[in-house]
Image 1 (cartoon, rainbow, N blue to C red):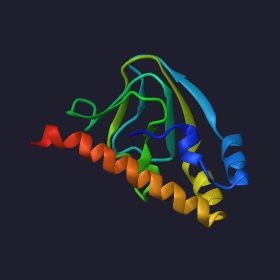
Image 2 (image 1 turned 135 degrees about the vertical axis):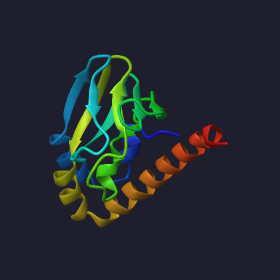
Image 3 (image 1 turned 90 degrees about the vertical axis):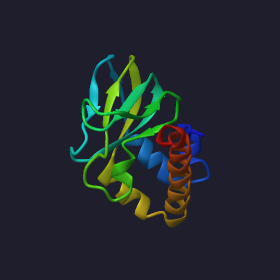
Image 4 (image 1 turned 30 degrees about the horizontal axis):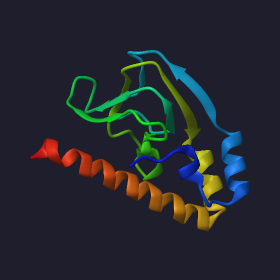
Amino acid sequence: MYLTQGDLFWGMDADFVKDVMNQTEKMDFEDGTTIFNQDEAADFFYVLIKGRIKLSIGTQGPVVFMAKDAGMVIGWSSLVGRETYSATALCVSEVKVVKIEKNSFLEKLAKYPSSESLLYKRLAQMLGDRLITLYPSLA
């Protein structure tokens, strides 16, 4: 399961969604570009539009997840109270993302409790699905 940008914000307050979308930035990355490194400050999260992003432990560690479907959220550490990223994100193709700044997003989210609840339910579902995807590699 993955979240499209529309799914991520589906059913949330229209003013909240408008405020958030006005603060986003579309970015393009070339193959081989590191978007963020493990243990760097988790100041942003990203919604994948196109491409493939490898998430790994450190720069040379094992691949823990491959983001390849539009709508996947990368850098979710910033949304769950972590100060730093838990993995390194490396583009393994040309990539297009929507970049969202954590602090501004969380400030806006706090003003809309029903939207906040929906977002965290969807984030929990996404993380649960990622764990299930990882189970075979752990066995």
